[in-house]
Amino acid sequence: MKNLICLFALSGFLFACNAPESQEAEAATTTQPEESPVTYQPIDTDEALMATALMAAPEASREGAKVIGYNMAGEFVTFKEGTNEFICLVDNPNQEGFNAACYHRSLEPFMARGRELRAEGKNANEIFDIREKEVKAGKLDMGETGATLHIYYGPEAQYDPATGEVDQAQYRYVVYMPFATAASTGLPERPVEPHHPWIMNPGTHRAHIMITPLTEGE
Figure 1 (spheres, rainbow, N blue to C red):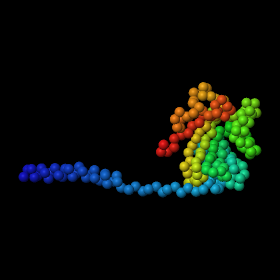
Figure 2 (figure 1 turned 90 degrees about the vertical axis):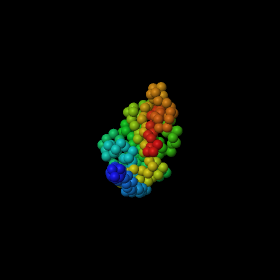
Figure 3 (figure 1 turned 30 degrees about the horizontal axis):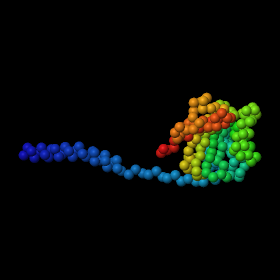
Figure 4 (figure 1 turned 135 degrees about the horizontal axis):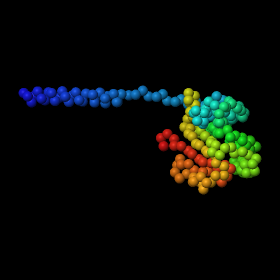
């Protein structure tokens, strides 16, 4: 009889111990509501061009950044004036994919000269050579050493109107160090591993440190 009573008592104890675990397991497997998928829209208005260009700037600096570039009518305009150190360049709507940029104001003479030469029909090599000569001659200002260019780019000109984020876009950063070399910086002339910093165009006016961050999932 005593054994039977002990057996009942033990069964009750085991049930009491297992019940919370079963409830926790059930709660853990409860289906969570799924997030609504983002509906991307074409970047086909001036407002969309400006919103996506500002994504290239650091978040805290977007409100005060100046925005310039080609509008949907093909005119080079100022979309909005700025109050801080950044100038954002909108994606060119006449080119495939998406490519917006944001750079330090001190780089504007260098950037503007490049746009001017491109408008004249000069190719990339010609633009490089002309600006190299002009910088060395003191005719063209390269801006502050260490001035940065932030690039926001991707394969699709589609964006989320709620956030300004562009479909599949990622960031790349350029730090301009005119005439710097691997020896003067300690950086390699090729990335040692993917996403490692390296120096491009060393020893020239356009010497710069390339930094490509990891993307989500890498």
